[in-house]
Length: 231
Image 1 (cartoon, one colour):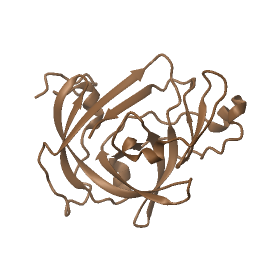
Image 2 (image 1 turned 120 degrees about the vertical axis):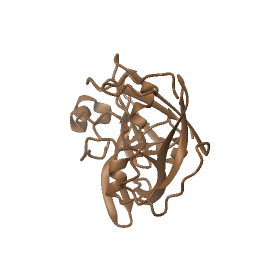
Image 3 (image 1 turned 180 degrees about the vertical axis):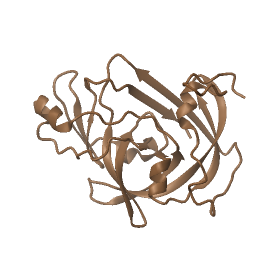
C-alpha cells in the first residue's frame, strides 16, 4: 500500500497524486471474451507529470483519424517524446469497438514505488499524411489522459506569425486530446522539416501525421505537461 495520500479533490486514496489520472479503464465496456489476465509483474511502468504555471507553450497536438473495421473516429493526439508508450482514452476505445487484452501494470513515478493497476491493450489503425497510408498502433486504454484541450485558433496564430502563414496545418474539429503517442512509435513523432521564426516564436514541424505547432508562448492559461511512461 502506498504511503502517499492523493491530494486530488474528493479522492484521498492511498496513491501518489501524479498517478490519479491513470486510473485503469473499466473492463465492463470492452469485450472480455478474448481477455487474458496476466500476472502483476508482467509489465513495468513509470509515470511522471510536470506542470508549469509560468510559461505555457504549444504542445505537439495534431488532429488524427483512427479506424477499426470500418468504424472511423476523428480526434486529437499528443506527440510525446517524454513517453515511451502509447495511451488511448477509454471512450474512444469504446467508439472504435475495440476488444482488449487485460494486463496488470506495475507503475512507478519519480516519487513513489510500484503501484499495480489493470489496463488493456488494443490495436487500431491511424491514417498518415506523409505518406498517405495507414499504420497499425497498439495502445493501453486509460480512463483519463488529463491533457489540456486545444484552446487556440490556428488561423489567428498564422496571421500573427509570418513564418507560419503558408503552413498547411490540419484543422481541429474536436478540442479533446484522447490519444497520447509515445516514442514506441518514433516514426510518427520524428520531424522531417522545421519552419522557425524569431527566438521564442512557435515552430511548425512536419511529421508523418501532418504539420504540427509546437513551442513558443501560447498566451493562454493551459499548463505545460510532460509525461513519462516506461513499459
